[in-house]
Amino acid sequence: MRTAFEKSCMATATLSIDLTALCENWRVLDAMTTCETAAVVKADGYGLGGDRPARALLHAGVKRFFVASSEEGTSLRQALGPEPEINILSGHMSGDTDMISDMTLTPMLNSVDQMLRHFEALPTAPFGVQLDTGMNRLGMEPAEWAATRDIVLAQGPTLLMSHLACADDPENPMNPRQLGAFHEMTDGIDVPRSLAATGGILLGDDYHFDLTRPGVGLYGGMPFVEATPVAQLDIPVIQIRDLEPGETVGYSNTWIANRPSRVATLAAGYADGILRAMGEDAWVHHGDTPCKVIGRISMDMIAADVTDLTETPTHLQLLGGHQSVDTLAEAAGTIGYEILTSLGERYGRRYKG
Image (cartoon, rainbow, N blue to C red; front, side, top):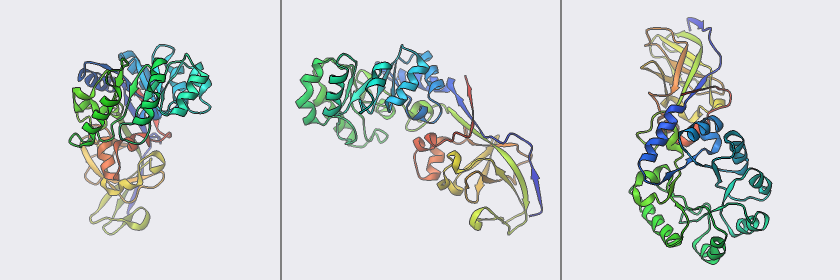
């Protein structure tokens, strides 16, 4: 190492969320169907913040929202007010009765136990039903549904729904199999139906029914290839070092300079959701110029080779127009959902649009 140059800049990485792009993604997905389009904003809006994106979607025209739990539903109700319908995918869990009642939440009942709990505690409160069409995760199985169907329908559910296991793979035979099972369980019933999330919307009209529930596609994730990027992550440079050939960077000396090199140390790491498994398959960008991530990603820092830049950077971009959540996911051997929902709380968040 010959010299080290320390940057004077903000020490916090900035996660920018483009609410205009979020709403445009919803409008494009909505235009693919002739039915109502809801929005899934669970897991704190897929890691991008639940309240602000949800308010933007409400303004764009969303009337129904889906979250994972009653706790998420309570937070969302406080943010959105009394108007929209807020559906709870985990259903009516033990201990949730007061929240469901006080916040006017609509649980998707997943079992006989949940059905009995809801009908006994809140006999006039709204509810929907989730059916298991083969994913074996949540919902009433065909025999369970057949035994309770008349009782449930007499109480007036707001929705019958199921979830596709392989919608991101259009040729997978599981898709038509689940579609057929959903028809068998719901045909002839005068209740709105929903089967499709983002991937199901892209499968075509047969999967749309009365309501679609896009989630990851709203936030710029696959399989919605045409999605406008929503999240941008810019990381400040703490220090830049000049290295001689043969010098190393990071834990375990995994990167060795093979030429005189400039290396930038960036102020974010796996504690901020930059998964260690990305290793050296990830890139950062300075404008349109890519810079290789080098060495091991550590808790609070990553390093990048900036030798070929013509100017000294103050920030480098990990996520944005040049590198999507799914590109980062491929580098880490995971999926875009995990990249989004892992984005750390230490970022300064900036909403625009």
